Amino acid sequence: MKLAPLALAATIALPGLASAQSLQITRAEDRPGMIGSAETFAGTAYVAPVVPPEIAGVSIGEVTFLPGARSAWHTHDEGQMLIVTKGTGWVQERGQPKQIMRAGDVVWAPPGVDHWHGATDATSVTHYAVQKGVTWGELVTDEDYAAD
Image 1 (cartoon, one colour):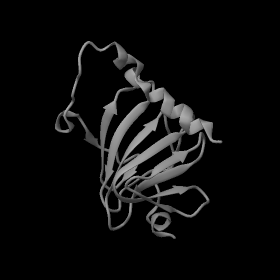
Image 2: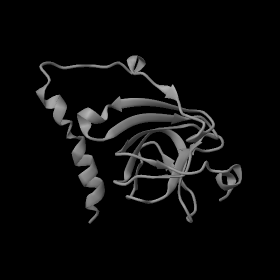
Image 3: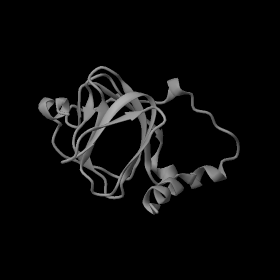
Image 4: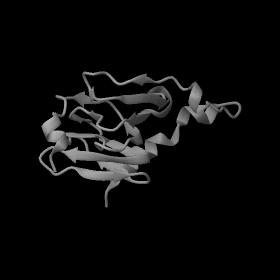
């Protein structure tokens, strides 16, 4: 039984929202976002925070990768969960073949597992990324990205 992903998901209970006095709606177009840094993303990736860490205890962000865009290699001390909402992308653990991720898929990267994720060379992909902290490594080379 894999408890780590469930434990991470359980932290998303949003304890700070439990004390809210009334329903709040933040419209998608009102959420601030930005193009991801060239130090941590190759190509165009748009990053929009969804729930701030001070509310959920974890960072939850929506990331859209345009075709060819991907994250740098990175790890998370407490793991990372990707919830794919649109499109088709790739995810790869260092030393393993890259894998396809599609809308509806959930990807769990255990603590300390070096990996990258992003769009395919022909399709965009959008996912929610749920994590606590990140340690960034080097950018994924074009050769590594294109490899099977």
